[in-house]
Image 1 (tube, rainbow, N blue to C red):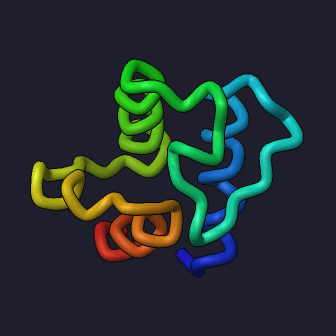
Image 2: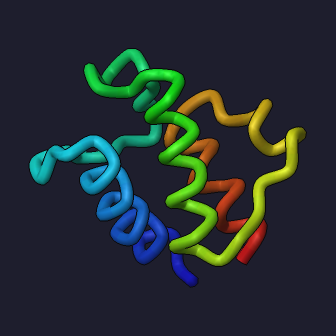
Length: 79
C-alpha cells in the first residue's frame, strides 16, 4: 500500500473517531492539534486503526507515536 493510500484510509478513521468530516491530517499533527483527542479517544483511534488496516500495534510501536507522520510510518512498516 502506498503512503498516499495509507493517508486516505487513515483520514477516514480519524474523521470517524473524532466526528469531524473536515479533519485534514498532516505529518506533524499531534493530539494537541485536535480538540476531541483525549486519552479515551486515543484508545478508540488505535483500535480503529488496527481493525481498518488489519494490523496489531506492539507497545514499542505505541511508544513511537509522536505524531501522525510517525503513525503513518509504523502502519506502513506493518503492511
